[in-house]
Amino acid sequence: MSYARACVIVLCCAGSLAACASYRPAPILPAQTSESIESRSLENPGLTGFIQAALAADNRPESASRATWDLARLTLAALYYQPDFELTRLKLETARAAVVTAGQIPNPTLSVDLMTAPINPSATLDFLIETFGKRGYRVDQAKAMVDSARRDVVTGAWQVRAHVRGALLNLWAAQQRRGLQQRRLMLQDELVQLLERRLMEGEASSVDVTRERINRNQFSLALRDTERQIADAQTQLAASVGVPVDAVPDKSLSFAVFEQPVMVRADDLPALRRQALTGRSDVQALLDQYRAAESALQLEVANQYPNVDLGPGYTFEPGEGYQFTAAASAALPVFNQNQGPILEAEAQRRTVAGQVTSLQAQIVSGIETALADYRATSAAVATANDLDDEARRRLDQIMRQFQAGDADRPTLVLAEIELSTTEIGSFEAGVQQRQALAALEDALQHPVFEPDFKFAPDEFPLPAMEPAQ
Image 1 (cartoon, rainbow, N blue to C red):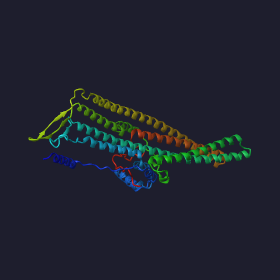
Image 2: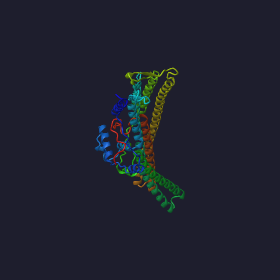
Image 3: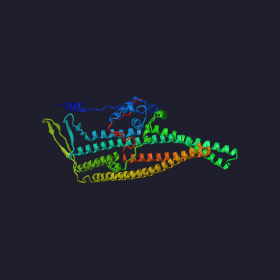
Image 4: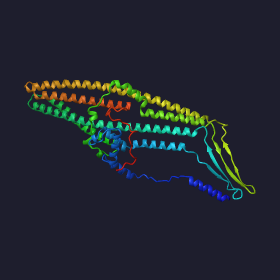
């Protein structure tokens, strides 16, 4: 067999065994991306199918809530559209690809001596043999990082829910506040008109009229500010979902979870606290990273021992024919035994362990802070409700006096203003209580609002990166 023919055969065999991937261009077109974002809609068929699949995985009938957009459906829409959440999923895809990389067997190396051809052709095929389970440690490390990335997806989904819930709560609070303030401004305007009439009749002082006019102006400005809060909350809600403002149907939004919230029972808190400290997705992600750090340390320990290069080959000598050869080589651990990388891996493992402890301390602090706010706001709600009941009783009494002719109209309006003021105070205390509940939900990573919805984004199908428009 000639030297040229041997080379051709070897190269053909190598080419036939190689399964090469082809490059596919994926250019970014900013104009097209912008148009896609601006045309997003909650009526998108792809979004509808995603929500149906997600609610089916939760054993929750989608048709029951299809006419309205509640917290659960808006959260699912945000998971479908939000680019920040998409980034966490892409990190998961990258981690899964790293498992393939970690498990790859090194390709052999073909060496041909071209200087002696065609007189004395020779060729060598080098195989790298990894020793002491190094490939297995790399694969274990990569798989642990996949688990960590999957937990990060869950953490990202909880963050998406928190943003949607906060925006929806702000919108509900602003709309309810507007109604209460409109009622309060109407009563204040009526009181000013009554006092102005009395002033013209000489039965009221200009000081009283001026004071009530100032109060009316202040309430009018407060109402204008509440209108601004509504517009801001609508923009915030659209941004949290990932759609234009016009795509959020204001009339079909459901605020039921805020109107009748489920309060946290004191008996459930110890178990929820323990679950948060060990079962929160960010805690589990760090535990997965710790497993990866342990595998990395095992890999560096194994790297103390050299790999082996096996090089079978052949040479051609005139008069003697082809002679097959075999060679083996390995690095000699003379100057170092991989001490530096081992120390780095040990330090990295201790760092991740410290991060777990630090995160758990933050969780405890977050739970304690949210609980303190929840208890304080609950006490404020109770006090505000008592004041509201007291003002209502006084109004009923004055109403009876007015109907009997023992009280005039300004006195009755003042009693109605007092009740309206206590109602606003009671409502604001309720808003603060719901905000404390939201903070507690985030700290526990347990659904307080809509507790029947099992929020587990790692258990239902996720949308494609480019949803159909």
